[in-house]
Image 1 (spheres, rainbow, N blue to C red):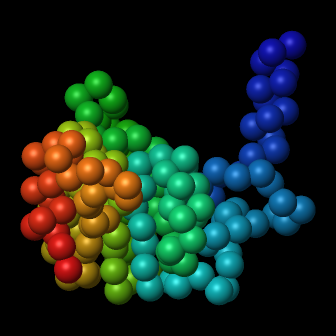
Image 2: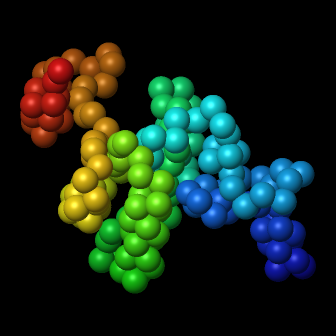
Length: 160
């Protein structure tokens, strides 16, 4: 019974062939998600995120109108390195095909996220495309005296 319900749910979902986003299937037979198929999106920018939930968080911020690439995990010794390598290879092939103006590495500000961001930068650098990362800094409403040194260091060195 549970297996039947799982199969029913998976039949209702679309995994985008272009970016890896997962969303409810629409009435179309398309293989791309609503973001990739939206003609109003900025096709010159690709934000690389770790998970679909990260894509959702960026969308809720309403500050980005480009495309995405979901890696479905991060570079960690605990995960399958072959699967991660395949997802990075797919990203590189996509970048070579679409030739965006900018790749935004939108990984979490964690040890694994930073390690993955540096790895992605090394892999993408030879393609000659502008590579940026999300800015970091202080949260609104925080007292500077309570901010850890690393966050304060990033806020000072990354200011504009």
